[in-house]
Length: 198
Image 1 (cartoon, rainbow, N blue to C red):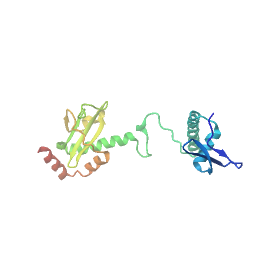
Image 2 (cartoon, one colour):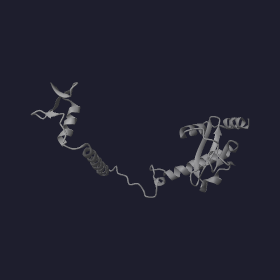
Image 3 (cartoon, rainbow, N blue to C red):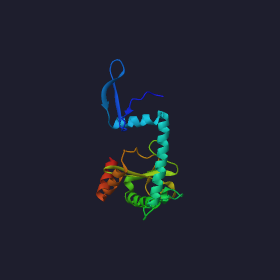
Image 4 (spheres, rainbow, N blue to C red):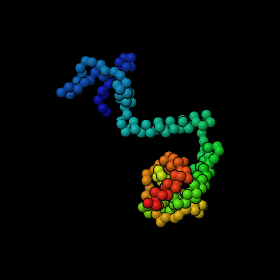
């Protein structure tokens, strides 16, 4: 058992009269109350060890998760995800798989329209690659725009030059990639080609 640092008045209000001086903990005659004292008193009232408090917090979290689950179900907010995978999830209009396929088709059209500044490779610049995938990119005046796709069925869709290894990634984000693609006019593509020939 431990020595309590708090006390309770006859009305149940938590307080402490302990302060520190050079010799040790002493009663200085002043009462301290407040939220921290209330919390400390509640802990001391429980008689639990720190380890028991941690176990209790885990149990409370599990109960809270169950309550949230039941509440979401009652309110009609509970969604059961399909077992077939995240690609089959839909926003009500398209699945992730459909959007991925659309992006592949649209990017292949862009790259195929600008084959002189586009490329594809089954290896990153460092020789690595995700299983069953390849990388395809286009060099815009603002820098690269790249995407990864499954080799089957998308490899042959990109009729651009194949590189043994992809150029080193320039650090572009997905937001920068789409901005670079959006800014790629015919004149911009020709400018990128001329810069690449130098």
